[in-house]
Amino acid sequence: MRQHIVGIHYALGPKIGEGSFGVIFEGENLLNKDAREPVAIKFEPRNSDAPQLRDEFRAYRILNDCRGIPHAYYYGQEGMHNVLVIDLLGPSLEDLFEWCGRRFSVKTTCLLARQMIDRVREIHEHDLIYRDIKPDNFLIAQFQLNSADPRTKQIAASANGDPNLIYMVDFGMAKQYRDPRTKQHIPYRERKSLSGTARYMSINTHFGREQSRRDDLESLGHVFFYFLRGSLPWQGLKAANNKLKYEKIGLTKQKLDPSDLLMNGTIPPQFATYLKYVRALKFEEEPDYKYLIGLIEDVMDCMGIIDDGHYDWMDLNNGDGWNIAVNKRANLHGYGNPTPRQNNSNANNGNRRKDTANNNNRHHATTDNNDTAKLNRISSSSRTRLNNMDNSRSHSNSHNNSSQDLLRGDHDYNNYSSNNRHQYTRHHTQNAGAAGANHYDSMGTRNYIPNNGNANHNGHRQYDRDNFTSPRDSFASYDQRDGDHDSDDERGCLARFFSSLCCCCCCC
Image (cartoon, rainbow, N blue to C red; front, side):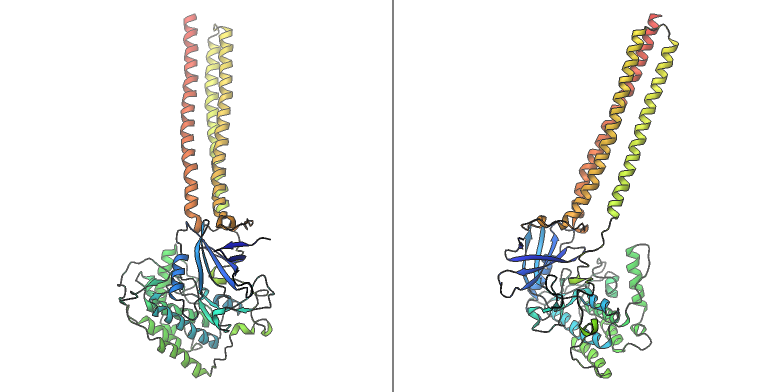
């Protein structure tokens, strides 16, 4: 079987994740055939409403020398898609959290917290803020290949042999908060659009305030409580729409004191101290990262926790650790399940629209036939009353009316069929445009791989709008032309009727 090549020397492997912004695959660097260096290859549609891979690539280049940041090897365009090649990594902290029963021990949370704070510190030192802190975007260095023995695990080359080194990925939302040369901080603004994940975003972000370093650290604090509690008090809130829901979440965060999150003292108070400190920071103030890491180390000292590199997920499967052959891969590289459940709501909506159009067409056809029948009855009664009318003329008129009725019926049927064809084309054009996101031949690879039926609707929203424009316009113009034909037919019937009436009067 021929390999699918992108970026000159990266072979495409099996799909390992899919999300709202694109698709991610396992891959292999063909330049180093002996090492068989695995990579992750990310695709996003070039016409996406919110393209991110270019900005993500730039962020990786800025952070190229940072520990816990994957190396970016290639960015370019393949067919109708943007492509980014980075280090292949293991499951996310959200995956591991799920596999561990949706609760991390204090030890595991502390070991993670020290690494996560240090990653954010390095990002800030390179003049960037992340703006989308969540467990899905923190990955471990150890991974398993789909194509290999599932018991065999590998470690990313940049991890230097540490299987549980925490990486940060998906820098599509990252932003420079100060000038790299002058170190001039961006100005404070309000009424900013929301960016990030509502569950973890800072209070200031909820209320439309410009984000800075303090907001990344506050989001980290929410993640720490999420690991320790299993959930957060503002999860599951209901509202009429997303805007009201986000406001409700923000108000709940604002009303709750960090000490209220300690679950009656079962969580070390240093985590509440952490959250109070970062929430009190000013917009441009530089955080004291050493103090924050010191709070975590204080928890470890008080509880006698030793950093032996042992995490909760290493106890899974009777001590064998996590395993993709046993545990579900819920969110690899933050991209979601590689085979998500198909959402047929759009197809169902299209079918409902088509059925509605068909019913409307049947109604119009029935109305037109009824009008024609009325004219026929008027004409028939008139011919009965005017018994002196010439039989041949009556026969001719009857024949003309019958022919007209037949033509009228054909016209209605054509109108009905044409409307159905428009609806069918519009419905299937939508599905084809969405499903096309997963056709690898459209990505510019060399062979065709069958589509799996999963649609990336966000990336093809503009594509669908363009497809809808033409059928709708032609549908409207067709209705207008059909109306003109109806008027001509009715005028013709009336003219022939009055012409026959006048002839009868003259003959009499």
